[in-house]
Amino acid sequence: MAMTLDGHVAHPTEAWNFGSSEDRRRMDRLREWADCLIVSRKTLEHDNMDLRVRTKPHSRSHPRPVIVLNSAEPLKAGLKVLQHSKIEGEVWISETAKSATLAEIWPDLTHPWQLNRYKDVRDIVASLYGRGFQKLLLEGGPSLNGRFFFHSLVDEFFLTLLPLLWGGKTTDRSVVSENSLPLERFRLRRAEKRGDEMFFRYVRRQRPTPKVKPVS
Image (tube, rainbow, N blue to C red; front, side, top):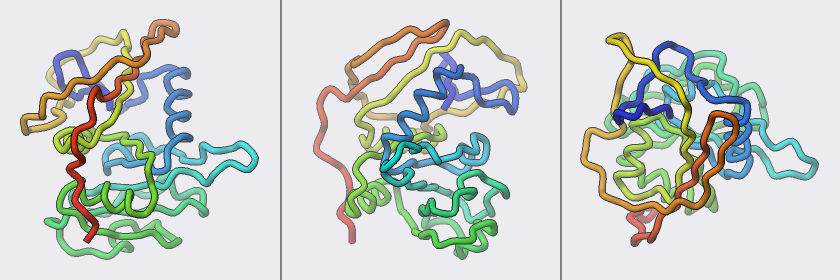
C-alpha cells in the first residue's frame, strides 16, 4: 500500500512499484515468513505477485493466498498466483455480494480452492487461526488494511519511506478507512537506512483482548 504524507493512498500512474530492489527483497522475505498472504482484488490484480518465494531445499510450502472480495465480479485473467499449480488458496466474498460460484468469480482457476463468505474480516482471521495459520501477512489494499486496523487485528506493520513527490487532479486518491480508527500506539522496533530509503518496523505496545469471533 502506497500512502502520501497527507494521509491518502495515491499514485500518479498505473505503475505501483515505487520501491527499490531492496524494498522488494524485504517484501519477499516477509512473504517467505508468512503462512498466509491476505490481499484484496485491486492489490492482487495490480501487483500480480508470484508467491513462489520459498526456494530453499526442504522449505515449507509457499504461503497460502487468501483473496478478499467485496463483489462477485470476475477476477482479472492471467494472474501469476495461478502459474504454480501446487499453490492452493481461498477466496472470501462479502455476504452482501450476489451469489456466485468460484468458476464465475475466477474462470482461470483449474485446481481446487475454497470459497467462503464473510460478514467482516474477523470471520476470516478466526477461520484461519482455527485451522492453524498463525503468521498472517496483510498486503492490502488500503480499505482492507483499514478494516483490520478498525478491529484491532494488526500486531505490527512495516513502513518504507521513499523520497518521491507527485500531485495533480488526476492522482487516484482514496483513504484507508471512512470510519474513525481506534487510537492505538505502536512501538518502533527497528529503523534502517538503505540508499535513499528508510525502513521501519513498528509493533503493538500492548495487545488488547482479541476481538475475533469464534468459528461457528
